[in-house]
Length: 308
Image 1 (cartoon, rainbow, N blue to C red):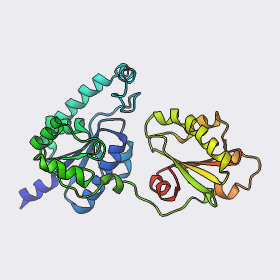
Image 2 (image 1 turned 90 degrees about the vertical axis):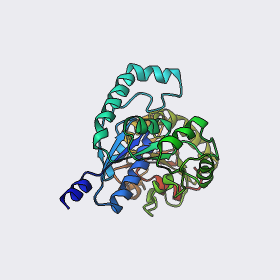
Image 3 (image 1 turned 60 degrees about the horizontal axis):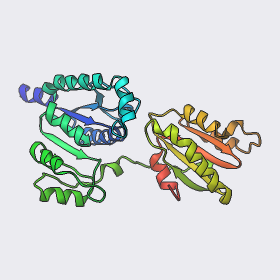
């Protein structure tokens, strides 16, 4: 009996995620595992960035992490690759591989969430019973390559695609795939709360991105918002800011485009909306247009917006 108890205490799941969005998805998976299995210890190894999204989930972050200039978009351009290499990308990769090797004896199950690189890390360094959640591809948009299917077939106990069509087609190729739902949609909870600061206005949701590129996108999005506001003065904008981004930096960028914090705006029938804001929200105004920066409310923005 003692031996059985000891084995139970040592059961560990290692979540491997290679992207900020993938960290969130893996965190939702960790939450579900924690609620269903009391004897599991859940570890997470975020490969891209610091894994900040895991902070709100019952998971222990392990391995080696470091923010890179590209924010994980190293394949987008030679310039991004060059900047990452200057910042220590190659050294970080070697350190992460070594960390995976060191973790291998302590892991009971491995779950890779992301693209084929996450899968590679799983079967190369932690070849335990391996589950793969491929988030990057779908047969609706861009199907998996033959080499990817071959690797899934060879190394995975189970593959959980994001839609039924992809799962069915993978099964036809001999991949142990099964559709049990879309983890991405499960990762977008709504609090059911509205946006008092934007009441009585048509809300447009703004998605600037979850990486460093968001700061570059905000000025361009600002121009778009101004153009819309000219013909539709009853609109308001809710910007979904990822938790790894800085609200204050975003406010400073928008200030250079002429947006002002609501509390600094002179005609202030704005006291009520400003008081209703949380610490993770900022309300800005420009020429009568309202712009709300909000973290942790992606689901609410999706639910309340007329257009995204």
